[in-house]
Length: 313
Ligand code: ZN
Image (cartoon, rainbow, N blue to C red; front, side, top):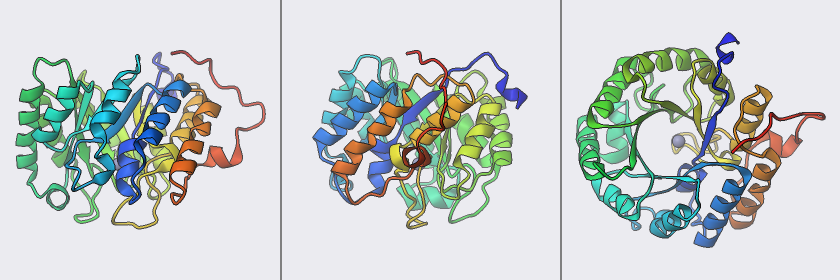
């Protein structure tokens, strides 16, 4: 894997379990447990967490405590606090609190976007431009996410051109990061390689992150392909939380703990202490007893003699 022979050995894991994971379960996690989760992940070395979604509480009671969670997370020095904002209204709330990063999402598939947010992709892009106007001058980073970038449960294959058109629109509006999301686990490593290459040609110096689901078991293989293409930021969820409404029972986001294991095995520096990260699962097991946590490392333990690269913060 000569692509791994690059000087940049640092990889950032962005925990999305508090948003992507929690939004897929019925049980509302008590606020105190969310705060304990955030604290414990930070203590384990995680330096970026998407802590909530700014959606109306009547639509998603899970995030009724978004303001409190963001306020708490902002009190942790050194943690990048990200929040999902579906529209300008949500962005206003997040900006008022001073969130460091706003994650916005548009589906590359027109039908998926309409099914999700009842807007066309063009309307969603116009919404992002509004968010960008609100965020101008605040120092808050805007991340433009393209969901179903590798395929869609309604339309099937998604053309790369559709993805690139959105990337272009995001960049023109002021996005400072692009996130390519395999929302429903359709990607294989070759698809990751080719889309990342094409997106990089459009994005230039703007960093690209991958948001991968393990719906069909290729999550970590796709990470490896992303690493070879120079990707150094990956979303993941503790215990692999986050399902897909179109595939009940299917696995969700790639597992944070297993991602760290892969990265360490390949010699990348994540800044994360794996045993401490695995221990954070106890909080979820206690607070969400009905959720089945996934993850190979938590179940099997580390290989005997496994030596992670030295950890830096
Ligand atoms: Zn997701």
